[in-house]
Every structure is written in structure tokens, then in C-alpha cells.
Length: 426
Image 1: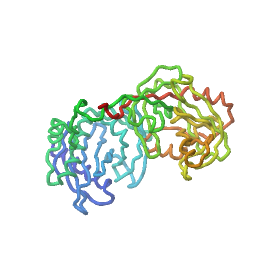
Image 2: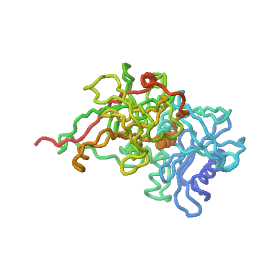
Image 3: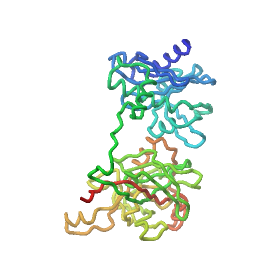
Image 4: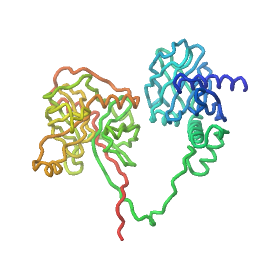
């Protein structure tokens, strides 16, 4: 046990060096002991300040996993082995599959000759937390990791970070016991007190159910679905279906309110195809096709197809994240794909110019001034969400009905239900 603890601390110190720039790290302070995982809290030796909490465990393959969370609440995953022959700073792609279903690509950096570290997006950290098996592939090497104790581990690491940030390294102790006490006290085990429960009958403001709808489209073979953040913002029950197909429950993987994008996950087996993203910019005057489900419940239950051109390469106030398009869009088109003439995605429809606002400002009613999010912002979002999407070069020109028929296999109606406060009757 002592030898294993010594090896673990050596790995965690190396891990610490990679998470706090080039500074050395001291620790562990306190203990993390969950199943076969061993670790604690660590400080930056150059400043003495707390830097992160981490734990490690070794596998029969000879590879050790290290997982930690730093003071900025970012999750990091390390792979270490004496058989690795790496140059510090080398980068590699590691494809991971959880429980044979959820997939992600991690981009790892060598922190030493025998360890690589990858930043875990929040969505991947959540999947990691609830999975029992992870298969990792880097190049030709394929490794399996049993993760049965990972859920409790991540809760303890989060508790360690919250506890040390609040009370300092001198308060470090048995973080597993702290997490257990916190969970029993109702703070979820992460060191943050739970909000007090309130009685609905005592609230001045009641809540009502609200329904929203929009459009989304499948962007990966794993069943990832791209839409606008405003389509699902505030929703607790999100569902989606292809035209004429059964409804499936969707979950939120990640979202970006600033760029109005959201990534959902559906059952991959339900989708036979997915969209490809155009690998180059469009030009003003290029023809485009918008597909979506406007005014769901009032118009057709099938999607609608509209055509137009790229009117401008920037949006309101010269915002270069957006395209201005003349293809007609209505409420419900939000989150839908915008295609070029070869059937590749060249944007995500996000909205139209507010007619009433423009009438008040100018006295004129605007026509066909609509907007879509460019592929650059889309790809940045998908890269940050670690989604394996595909790009393609525009090829032969397709007729609009051909583009629509192709989109039928991956364009969904998104519906959701949420709560919004309403003033209670007096």
C-alpha cells in the first residue's frame, strides 16, 4: 500500500506540473481515497497557493489514469505509463467510448515523457462520471478502463476543490468523509449548500408550463443534434423527431448562450444519416436553402423548405459571426440547417429582424432580413464540445427537392416544456 501511495503521489505531482504551467507542485494535502483511487489536494510550489485536487489509479495494462479538477473548476484526465516514449509538448488525439455508446475525441498534451493530459469538456466529464467502462484509442493502441468507482470519485474531487477554495489547504482532511457529510446535509456533496426549499402555496409568483418548438439537425453518427440555445433554454423536457417518425427524449450535452448554440444527444440508432459541414466560406450572392418547422401546430406537420441567397457576410451591427440571408424564416425555423447548393451545411438559422422594432425605428417594414450562424462559430462550438463531425468540399449542384430529401434523414422538430414564472392572481 505504501509503495502504491508513493507511485500515486509521483504521478499526481507530474500531473500538477502540467496543470499549473511550468511550476512545481507540492502535496498531497489531505487525502482522497475512493475505491482504488488515491490522491488529495495540491499547491503550486512557486506561490504556495492551492492549484487543484486529483487522484490516480493503475490498471493491469500498466497504464494509470489520473483525474483532477483545478481551481478554475476545469476537469483534466491523464494517461500515464512507463512504456510511453513522448516528447514534452507533443499532442495526440485520443478517441474514447463510454459504455459502448457515447463517443468523444480528446486532445491530449504530453506533460512528461510518460504522461499525457487532456482537458475534459463538462459534457464528457458528466459522461465519465456515470459510465462503468471507457475504451480509449490513441493511434493503434486500444485500452479499456473500468470506471465503476468514478462517480463517487468525481464528487469527492469536486468537494476537495470547493473545501480548499473556501477554507484553505490547512483545512485539508479526508475529503471522502467531507463529501459524505455534505451529501447527507443536502448540498449534493460538492461543498455548495443547497438552496432552501420553498412552498409553492407561499410563493408570491407561481409557475406555469410553457411549450416551445424549433428545429435541429443531426451532426454526428453518435446522435449529436445541433440547434439554437434559445430553442431549449429553460426547458426541462426536450424531445425531437424526424418528420413522420417516433418522438425521442433528448438531453443537453453543452450550450453556448453567447453564440446561441446548443448540442443535444439523441439515440444514435434512430438516425440513419447526419449533416456534413461545408469546409470553406460562402460568398455574397450564393444560393442557400433553409429547412425547418415553423409555426408548429398551425402549419404543416412536415418541414418547410425556402430558398434565397446570402445577402451579406455579417449580421446586425456588422457582427461577423452571422450571415444575412434572404431565405424566408419564421418562428420555429430557429436551429435549422442552412444548406448550400451541394447540400452541405453553411449555417444554423437563428432568427429574423424584428419587424415591429424596425417600424418604430424607421417607419418601414423590413422584408427578408434573416440571419444564420456561420460555420466558423459552429465548428468552434463543436470542437469545444468534442464532437466528431464531418466537413466536405462543395461538389455538384443539387436541385432543391434533392437537398430537401437528403435533409429528411437528419432534420428534426424540437419541442420542449419548461417552467416560467407568472404573477399569481391576488
